[in-house]
Image 1 (cartoon, rainbow, N blue to C red):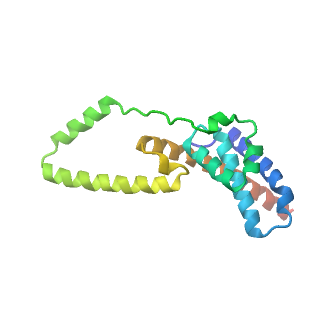
Image 2: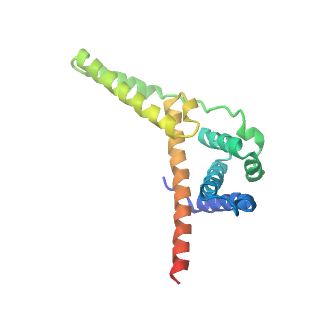
Image 3: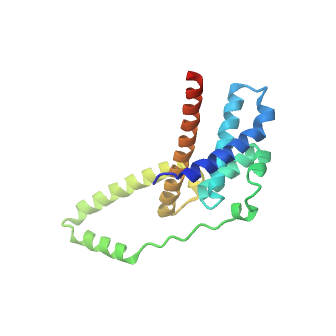
Length: 180
């Protein structure tokens, strides 16, 4: 799933607004402070694309609000506050046919002790990978449902791709301007 051009445009617009809010305070600051301002405004711009409909976007907004609440209030002025706070997680239901089919497949297996060993290893591996995802995705530590975690991760990846595409376009434009 690739980000759309409208997502790129909206991200650029929101990010530019965040940088303009930071502009007066950025002029006489260190490189690390400028980097923090760019990252913070990019995070809020990326989260504002989802308007608080995903766990990761609300987690990014909450984290950014602890660092600079003025920036967050200015950038999210058009989004209703109720959508960002106390939003319930969607209920994910596992399809019964899938569960029945997987049970039948497991029952067909020959040796139960070998199967138990393989199952234990697989569960351990899945647990370790999901723990890693929870650490990477903002707000992931609060998601107990693995299906929701994967959906949020996929959505977060698309948003990160949007951010990278826009930043790459800016760098390409800047390099083209320097070559002239």
